[in-house]
Length: 332
Ligand code: SER
Image (tube, rainbow, N blue to C red; front, side, top):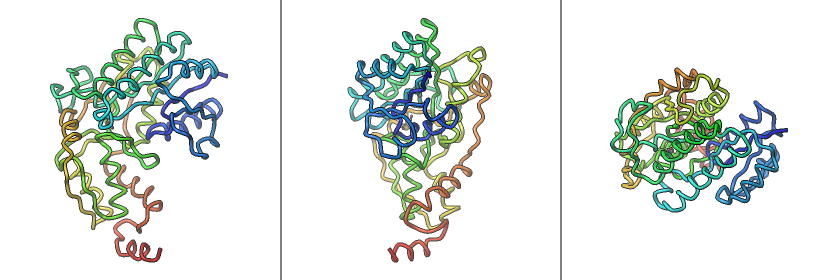
């Protein structure tokens, strides 16, 4: 039996992609790996191996042992962490991708590579950013994503490796937390809004960025990997879009459910500078034309679903129900 391997499986994307792949292809065929020790639940749901993707020997061994047919290579440092540890970011984001592509060349397996809106830079057109445009990122995260796109393209045309990828926007989800990105505020805000009716945002009120709800991102990844290769002109680094908004706009949307919610701002210069170098919105017409990409969640549908999912897990009461929330908290 040939297997599907997921690296970084305990991260924000992996923790939702692994169950989706298992539902589609069978639990035993999907091997989840992460550098972290898995929680018991993760081990019970299917095969799990601890794996440091910067260890080429360990990568080789795992690929051989499982007879891999496709790898979803999610292990990477996100933008803010990468700016704090640029050397480690290069090592993890680029080193492991290179090794993975080399193994893909030798063992003939497909590779999914998640690129990002971070692969663009300050000289990129910032509104409706085209698929093919100027890419001069000025963050280490962006450097590794732009270089990763090129390396995947190289292995595809030079060696025939079936490498495919998306430029994902900020991802909003309720299962696993994001791990140190610039767009993380759009997840934190929900937790704080439900718990405390208040959030202090590290980006300025008018910072517009592209975002996507996780169910759309998972579907995009799986649809791209299942797409007819004959139709793919780009293969790697497809822009995919679903919504774009500012912190102020998201706060207004949350207020429709939690009227007492208030937001204030304490701008973090590092993350603000990263956000200011990224597109305000991106054009995903290539993905729409080449593999029929269509998002399902806009800001209103995403916000309603996030609150519906998170509310029962967090401490306070129902939407717009601050008084009941306080009572419940006091009763604990
Ligand atoms: N969400 C990512 C980050 O902020 C963007 O790819 O780093």
